[in-house]
Amino acid sequence: GGSFPRSACIDVLNTSSWPRTGLVTLPPEQVAAGDRVHDIEGRPIPSQRLQNGRLVALARDVPAFGSKRLCPVPGQ
Image 1: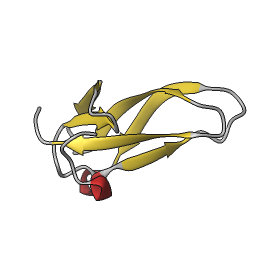
Image 2 (image 1 turned 135 degrees about the vertical axis):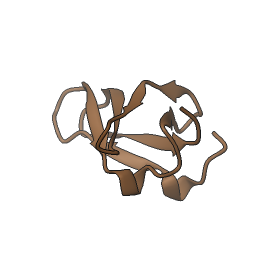
Image 3 (image 1 turned 180 degrees about the vertical axis):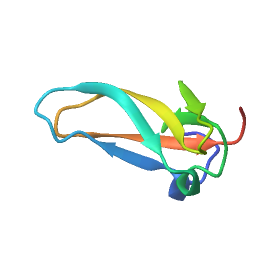
């Protein structure tokens, strides 16, 4: 895993019966750790901090009726 506290991670849920890829917008108070996002294995995920303080990340290939864990980490 990565070098981040598990409590800082956010689970993205897919309630559809097919795999999905999409943007996830996270409020500033949930992503105060930094502007970067990693998956649970520590691999970087494309993300961008918006002017309003929210962080947008790409949740790629979230399995049908499943989830993917995104972890904000320090850095830009």
